Amino acid sequence: MTDDTFARTFPAGFTWGTATAAYQIEGAAAEGGRTPSIWDTYAHFSGRVDRNDSGDVADDHYHRWAEDVDHLAQLGVGAYRLSISWSRVIPTGRGPLNPEGVAFYRTLLTALRERGIQPYVTLYHWDLPQELEDEGGWTVRSTAEAFADYARAVVAELGDLVKVWTTLNEPWCSAYLGYASGVHAPGRSEPAGALAAVHHLNLAHGLAALAIREVEPDARVSVTLNLHVLRAADPTSEGDLDAVRRIDALGNRAFLAPMLEGEYPADLLADTAAVTDWGFVQDGDLEIVRQPLDVLGVNYYSTTTVSAGDAAAAPEDLGVESTAADGHRPSSHSAWVGSEDVKFAAPTGPLTSMGWNQEPAGLTELLVELGKRYPGQPLMVTENGAAFEDEESVDAVGRRRVHDAARVAYLHDHVDALGAAIDAGADVRGYFAWSLLDNFEWGWGYSKRFGIIRVDYDTLERVWKDSAHWYRRLSTTGALPAVTEVDPA
Ligand code: GBH
Image (cartoon, rainbow, N blue to C red; front, side, top):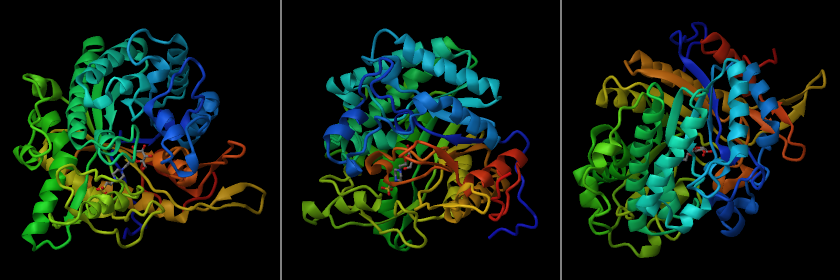
């Protein structure tokens, strides 16, 4: 616990922001020349999204962007992390740009510039154009090449307005949730395909980084990973420690090692040898994947505890548990290709409404460890936040209020944990709260709310939660406010 009498302060120049993603907030799914992405298809046809919600309307940000930029300005944030919808700017996935799609982002980015808000733009936050999925999606190499062309075209159009480009958001989710457990679009369950997707996403990152710098030599390039902070159920058990090693290989080192060290870990290749011979990795690929990163983005929500599994268990006992522990609905296949037998402990302690445990210390550990493993590599927390059951009320002077004390405490404790990592030597340059707005929470639809600003899904009105008031104090002072500092300005 922090002693709030001596508020923690952050370095001058530390970046405070909020984050969103295109499919989760934009809506206008069939407007302005946009064509379906894999998430449109999955939401409409898989039957696997809560209440069959979709991003058709979402927060209607496509029409309400000006109001949302006003909210960002009122929050006093210096940065805003958004993503571009690939099929809005290149409707067929490859080929000519759609001027109307480009114009939408140009207008939005210009408005951010006018308010002095630095955009952090992610090129891919899970919304692959459906046409490319029809050609094999991330299981085929040509998708990585199409991504580089898309990156080149977008940076040529918008590079004057954007300094920091992020290639991918959480390729772990795209590969394993999309192609192994199938709890994300495109909903396929093909273990070997998922590992091919891992490689093609890594390749896409490298090719895009090269393309971005080719067009804009001064651009800053980053990638955002969801790294797993792992604990052994029994730290004295060799089997449990080996489970940690295997999940670390699949979940963390499958991306970190090629991107930052130019190789796939030998143990990852060995652990997955029965699934694939990794023949999709071609000569020269790893040199492409390894590109200098101006920022390594990290998304952090909770920790994961694993133990050695029973390799002889019946297939129906494998994997199902692990995806359920992730808060997703049960699937016929585990996300953890080749390590389906590893057991995932049910989260304990205070949980969020995703069922995820709250463990701020995990964020400190993660950042400190990354700093040690990759000295000199600047880091940012590109997402952190929590879903809770928020309730609206009206205060004495008639204002709509949302008292989300649990979210304020979560943000407070995690920002504090980030500060502790800086104290311990980690080079962390920024923090983005997930999310600016309640939005389409993927497989959970609108049933889970991560926003610091509430969205009334009947009227699409935005209502500041206490966490937004709290976050405004943090971003405007650079000092950690007490959890009680939530009154409207
Ligand atoms: C992020 O995904 C997304 O970038 C964002 O779009 C989304 O809205 C937000 O978080 C909230 O979900 O070790 O098996 O227990 C985060 C998804 C959640 C995936 C935690 C991995 C733990 C995996 N991650 N999960 S496991």
